[in-house]
Length: 254
Length: 130
Image 1 (tube, each protein chain N blue to C red):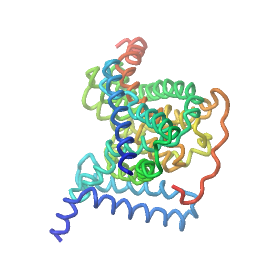
Image 2 (image 1 turned 120 degrees about the vertical axis):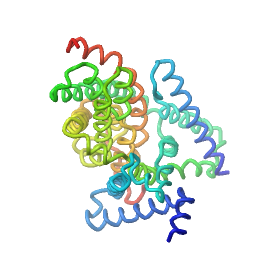
Image 3 (image 1 turned 60 degrees about the vertical axis):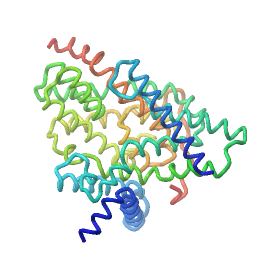
Image 4 (image 1 turned 45 degrees about the horizontal axis):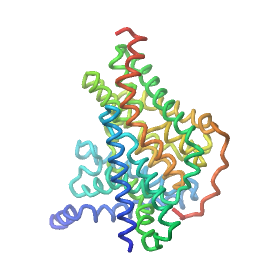
């Protein structure tokens, strides 16, 4: 037994292919048998992935879900930022550049609005819970944008570690919600063409959330959503500690 | 050769990420700005040019399409390593801020997608095509 787990840890990435293959097969079976294909197999697979991440986190107390279990460390490589981004870029192959140019204006508006609205919601919630200083409001607002914007904003402004932790939790929750929720809200918000996908990517911003959510909805939408979402975190980190902090400072006065 | 396609994809990826990092430095942000987006544009433009000049044989194309087909499994692996425990442990502030921002932005999608005219939905997908 020990020998086998050692071999599996040594061949981490290869074992990850097997694990994910099994999860995919199981998910498509569940999707066909239990929902008659209504809930897409990839949506089921992402939900199972998140459950596994939760179990891994409970078991190890670590921050990388299932990948913190030594035997499953290869999941960390397979689903890490490097291969994820390579796969996202590859989905752009065959995309019609005219579609992107046509949706350009909508994408830019989506980005600005998405960052601003997320900060506003996060800052209002922070204030409602007694964090009425501009630094904490901007940090939690940044967390409501993405789990990277929050800590970057907080670190730049000198927020307390408690507030930074809250902002990370808010951002992580958003990523998980977008991954699970996208296929369910897609019919309600007309998320079925390249342009609405570009608007969606810009408004939601969380790359992992959008990447997972659109994969579970319709894989053909992935490149359009990913295209705008990839600008979001950078722009959020740019606006958070500057424009948005100054606006909050002007409103709160402290 | 298949590796030509993989190499072209990887080169676009790296060039895009470098551009994104440079843009981040220019803007003074501790983050990559649009790297993956630039990489996607580079891949679209370069493969379009290669195809039109007949320099992208089907075998090279396979090297790109393989990674495209691996996209969903990779996303599942990504889901399996999210910090779900921390996401759920943030208490009411984190939950209300996270859920509130998500719902507010989702609700804006139809309005923003209408800018410059409504688009027709994509044709329905064949089962198991993904």
